[in-house]
Length: 367
Image 1 (cartoon, rainbow, N blue to C red):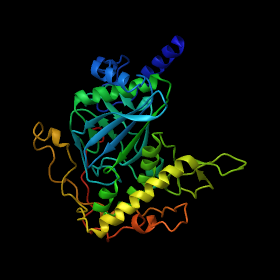
Image 2: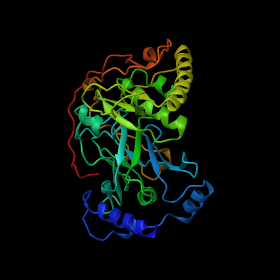
Image 3: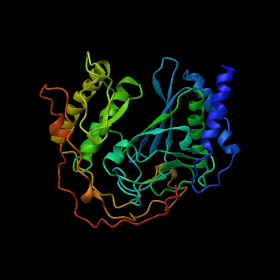
Image 4: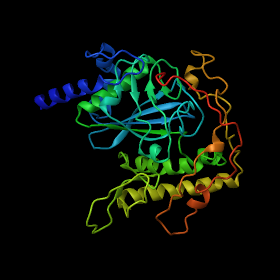
């Protein structure tokens, strides 16, 4: 075990050095990248029966401006460890489409040790790995999309230096436990029936509905969902059909192969989806006010930081981009029980906004 730990430590240290974020590369890790977790966080790990090196999942919520770190406990399930208020994110609700649109990404991302940057000019940074397979299949581009410090964002999720120090250490330690990566789930908001009903007129609704499937798998099982991409859409926890002679092979841009969802996961997710549908329908019947499609602001900030960083959230530097959102293929639902899911979540409820699609450009190394 000692030998294995030494090998993992050396491999992790070697993997950290190539990535730069407008910082100077170095063969020696700076002290900020090797700092131990604070005593109060180590105590919290012990209380929650979580090993320091156990796997993590990071969840991001734009509208609430919160970052959650979930960690695997002794029972093998992920439980919430700590919620961090996000100091700054840029753009608007909705996925990142193009370089320079200032949009912080939304989707499911995989972070490996080589995406951890100990030499960032923004204290420390974690590259989300944008664009992923889904983004590339939908011809979306961009680079240097990070979770980092300094509370300043041009398409990133910016934390304070103190916060990113903890998050970075939790990520680093999870690699030392033997996992080659950890998952980041980035959402526009918590995907509750109320939030989806408020944003029912947004052209991104079909995309958010797709993300909700993975969100529901995670929340109902406390297990990290397996993520694949085919037919330019996400699929979650797919496995070969019974008696299939060959393993599944997914091509992000091509038709999905025959697959089934793990039955235990599918059952729990279906129960949640049906309950959410009923609540969604009730909210529509009650005429819940719809949120505006475009906020007019460049991103957001958790209210905990408004007094500390006044003026950081300004009027948007880019125009609304809803008018040139690409059309995603429809998502087929596996049940034929008369569910209203496709009626409620399957289509947008309004025409796209017509606007000037001009976008500002910013240095790619800003994050």
